[in-house]
Image (cartoon, rainbow, N blue to C red; front, side):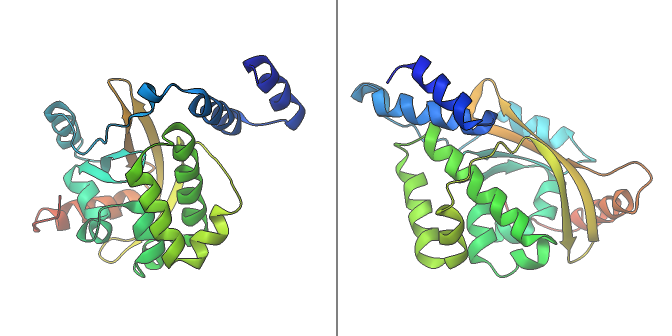
Length: 219
């Protein structure tokens, strides 16, 4: 099947940008030469990225890979996701296998849907990543909620939006997020959260900052 045929199929099905990208990822993976199918796992971030994170003192931020592993974070990011980081440090595993996630995410169903769509999208662009396959297998085995959502085959870009989080110290935070792929590290994305100026959530982030300064946080 040619790219032109795929384009025609996409128009007929009215695929959105994420669905179209996923379709082409699957097509490229199926047609890739064996030498191109090797996958290199990203486990660390460059020192410059960590310095950038540390310079962001008013916004929780972190660096994630396509499997939703938090590889690095600033102090506010470590405070916001301290429960996830005290476990495996993987946000998808946290969402489905850690009961504390249902307290942290006010809209847990929305967060769960997002996690599955992100992983489904990642399997299209990284079909030969054994750790990604293992993660999907683990979640499918241990979570009926994950299995049901995975069977829906939904894909989605997770570039911007809002999240409402319930932190045990700072309380409820209404935050906007931006997720940007890093051009020099295509396997990684910068995820940052901000609160509207003058809002209760901005005050809650200040409280979170004060609390974070008193603790030795994971990562």
